[in-house]
Image (cartoon, rainbow, N blue to C red; front, side, top):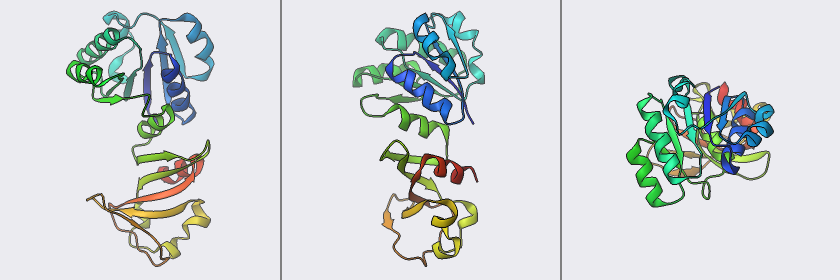
Length: 215
């Protein structure tokens, strides 16, 4: 479980906050628009109304306590001001929404640690990535299923696919392995033995992958 602050309850921020919360994280959602917060307050852990371009309002949120802070406001200048304030307040990880390469460059200069493009990265994919640090990549196939890149669990290392009986026990399908050099090889044999520190590509539901990566 992570503690997350989402600043901005627009289309992307709204879905990001809801997805993060549904994945078991503690989520604070803030926005200056009272109607948006009233609409979403029951879908997140906590919420507040205010102008968070103001340093004092951000300071009151206890910025250092959050694992991730997502800046999802739409305005170019407002997002830069907020990122700059967050950096000065000691934020651990700032992820900011960009609308263009120029916007991205200025956000990086202001102190953002990572940039999110809503047109490229869905809210759900972003939520998956920052909810579970054992998940390194994700492709959504349906509302329930996806293909995930995860680290091979320690207890799998040195054991074969057949011996672990992964599909029956964990209800996921192992598709491929990925080396540290980013070489992907399909796993076709039940005799395949998992290696320490390798990544594996698996197909499964959100629920089953969540259980697997928490083991």
